[in-house]
Amino acid sequence: VSTPPSTLLPEATSSALPTQSPTKPEESIKPEIPAETQLPEKQIFDDVSTDHWAFDAVQKFSQSGIVLGYGNGMFGVDDPITYEHFGLLLNRLFNYQSEDISKTAAIREYVIVSTVKALNLDTEGIDESLIEKTFSDCGNIAAENRKYIAVAIENSLIIGFDGKLFPCDPLTRAETVVLLDRAVNCQGNTIWK
Image (tube, rainbow, N blue to C red):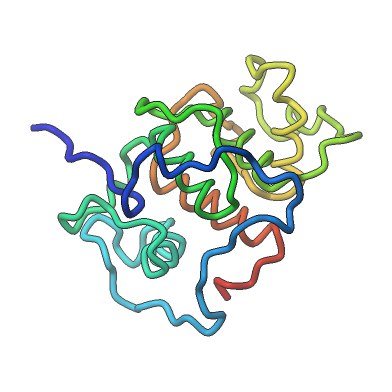
């Protein structure tokens, strides 16, 4: 049985990416969602029950048209997000162009670093020891990425699981939407509330 192609975004093609990244956070494009948007109380996708830990974020992103699922009633909560679709989400939410838009599973470390870069969060002077104080499995994080991971921790973008981050593992579609929901809120955007 083959997995259907992912359709996180309408017209999910790499040609939708801009030719350059924004230089200032105020240049970011925000989803056009009224602040008073009411989320449906019933599940939109068959595989995202109302008691699923990512239900609220998936509902918000689905209702806003940011994610569409597979088109067969399934979101694919446990399927890995690809670099291509993650890049399209960053582009749609923050007008940010990802460096990697391949169709392979996106690794957590890359996704976290790209999210911090898309938010244009200040990494100057960050205490990188925050990583080891928070997660026990981060010895393999690339030296140039440590400041971004520390900033993500400081801004509550990531919380890990049982004291671990699993930086070399793929990120699931559900985890991605929850991370990006936190990122939208981190920018002070209240469109979800």
